[in-house]
Amino acid sequence: MRPSTRRILVALPVILAALGLAPAVAASDAASPVQQRILELFFIILVFALIIGVLVHVIILAAVQWYKDSPRWRAPKGHPRTHDRRLELGWTVGPVLILAAVVAVTWVAIPFVERPAHYDYAIEVIGAQWAWRFHYPSPFVFPNGTNATVPESSGTMYIQQGVTFLLLVRSNDVNHAFYVPDLGIKIDAIPGRTNIFWVQATRPGTYTVQCAEFCGLGHSQMHGEVVVFRPGTRAIPYGPPPSTVQSDFGSPKYTIVDIAFKESPGSCNEGQWSIQPCAITLGSNFNVTFRVWNNESGTHLFEIATTPTGIIGPAQEPKTPHEPVFINFNTGPPGQYAFWCNIPGHRGLGMEGILNVTGPRTENVLLRDNSISPSEIEAPLGTSLSFAISNVGTRPHNFSVGPPYDTRTQAIPSGGNATITLVLNRTASAAPYGDLPGIAGTLRVITSGRVTPPPPPPAGFPVVEVTFGLAGLAAAAAILFNFKLARDVRRRQRLPPEEE
Image (cartoon, rainbow, N blue to C red; front, side, top):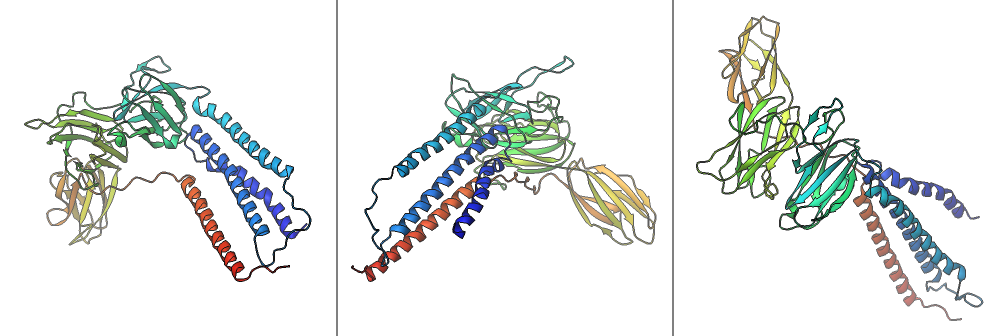
């Protein structure tokens, strides 16, 4: 046996083992069992395709090498073989076996993808031009026998990690398709018919919903989200978070932050319309009132569905004189939450923004005999701010915060320390702090500013990169091979074969 043949036989089991493990490895980061099974099936078929492609290219290259016309070519001795039953049997039976294997793995996967073995709850998914609504089982019965009403949600479906949900998908008007790529969901929503699918999310997070069936002018804006929350974070395993908003959206109760719909471009995106301010920063667990204005020509509706309070305001029609809507809520824990206009198509035109909720904050302050450090502090409205003060001067100093907070003076001896904590519940452009009057710094309390982008989603298997990379390699190899054939043709033209 030739050394090259031995090397091929030694490497072959390793290559086959790697190809066999590739589907399971590629699907290991799936966010649901359905998505995992779909990825496994895709990569099993991809492995078969790679094997066939490599085999076909090897045979083509070998045939070209064996039968190419060159000065060294000699006709074979004896009569040439024109038929080979073993070869014909191989290229007939081989593809049949491969197709049978693909059919077998697909036949096993399809029932698992389409129907769950069992489910815990059923959710109605209703499509309409151009938004998604989700109707949950209500009321929810707790183990102690008490009931809780679960309202439906618009645009966002809320489900608990690890719980199996049956999805009853239908449409109120035209054909739609409920498509959540990261969860492996794709099912048509047809008027007058209920289609069935299922989901069991294995990783918490927020997943994008798209409409995969052209349904009219607003089709490209028919987006939504599936929010998967961890077990134990809510009493009910589905449905929007409980709301603390007053039912009539009537009068302001807390510190007011103004928000306005604008039918003109803003600073956060390149859309035709905007919400101003489009970037709001507030402290955590802070009671705030959003005063929402509509001074434009069209009807608008404020929604901040991903906050802990899950708010959808009433529709605001253009009025004269203009009247705002007051939305009272608590910001909850730190995080980033989107808000937008819920009128179909308006969010896609740019009417959206980000609420950045920050946690408590501590500032180390050094008091000297003739200066203070830092000389300026900027913090979001609603922040619980602690001043950790150190008197590094040679004499005693006082510390306080001036208007609009007016805290009590704290006496600090030379070399001593003190702490003052206050909630920044009023905006201020230049509130003084320090040994007042005299040695002072400036406190700025803001509501809008730069918002840090949310963390990127976890990286999955690079399906697109691998597919296009293999296609690129194949194309490059084909081009190089054609150049080689052309060179051989030119060489044969210069050096014709010798006649016997």
